[in-house]
Image 1 (cartoon, rainbow, N blue to C red):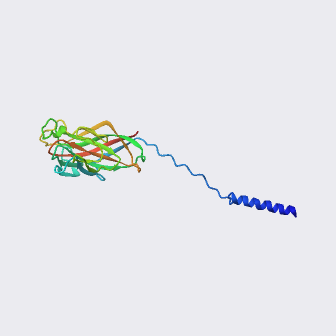
Image 2: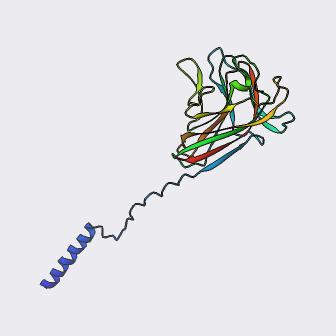
Image 3: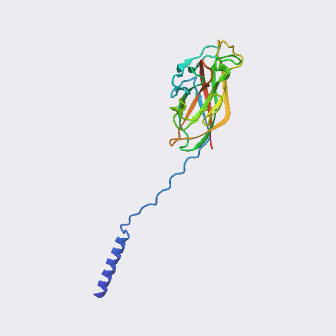
Length: 247
């Protein structure tokens, strides 16, 4: 009888021990490690304005109250012979000594929060010749082709000096900025100063722009002209190539 009582006591103690230790046989798997982030790779973005301008938005900057550019406009338009075809038409009248005429678009497909560099080349059509005259400078030599890359959407911000500039450093006329680089001047040698004929040209720079993709792997590209020519300038952007590389 005493042995049975002893066995019962031991069994009860064992049950209590199992209960205290979670004896319901439940199992919790250890937390899984997050998958490794994708490795950034080099890529090429080809922009072809001869096929359309969907997603692009044009604007002007680098002016003050009272010197806003006039005759501004943008659209997908047919080029005159001998160039022909379609292009992204931009026009503005510089009423001071500076106007940045541009178009912007957001691109995706990069690794979120990864660091990159990008270099640009840009093709366009213009009737601006070299070796001519103009107020504030000639159209050929005083209008600069600019390409830029930035994480945040480009927006106008009024500066302490009263100028309305974009919210990143795209440079100032002939001087490149941290996020924008001068690819060259607009003028094409061999055209006449009367502007009677358009021709194609390509400008490029090997000077890389460093930027960081946002949390969704996106960034912005800006293409345009920075002008010291005090008058009306129009041109057709035909396309661009952005060579993106991981840092």
